[in-house]
Length: 178
Image 1 (cartoon, helix red, strand yellow):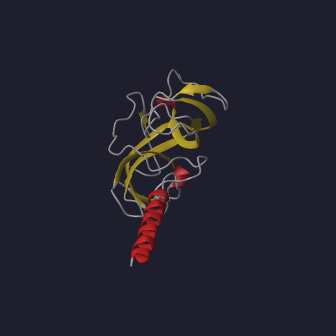
Image 2 (spheres, rainbow, N blue to C red):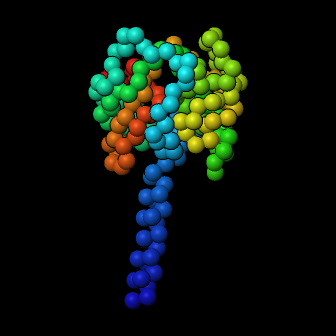
Image 3 (cartoon, rainbow, N blue to C red):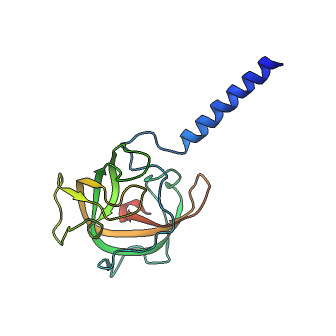
């Protein structure tokens, strides 16, 4: 009886550990884990609305990327469309429990980079992020990996894995929607 309870306890502990780990992406080279800050709807005041976006505000599209677990294949509602330069960046969180580097995070936009001005920043440029999409992002030092002049979209969606609706997720580019 005691042996059966011990085995059951070990199995329960293992199951809880596996469940906890499955809620985060293990590979730091992935864009990020599910630490998205929900409900952040503010956009930079100098961000310009897209004049003729492929996806108008209020339209539906299917997400064709996996920035976060449960994103790929989910139905999105577009809540904003803006013309800007979108950057892939690598950074070490400025705050929070993890100081592990976040590599190839998509996307931080021109207006969310401190003192970025109007010129497109080159790969390798060291910058400070002013965006607060993820825990530890605001104030983090980052390195530009790539730049893309494009329309970026802010969306609402419910993860395909279930769970709470994500509102005002920033950012997706056109090729990440279909």
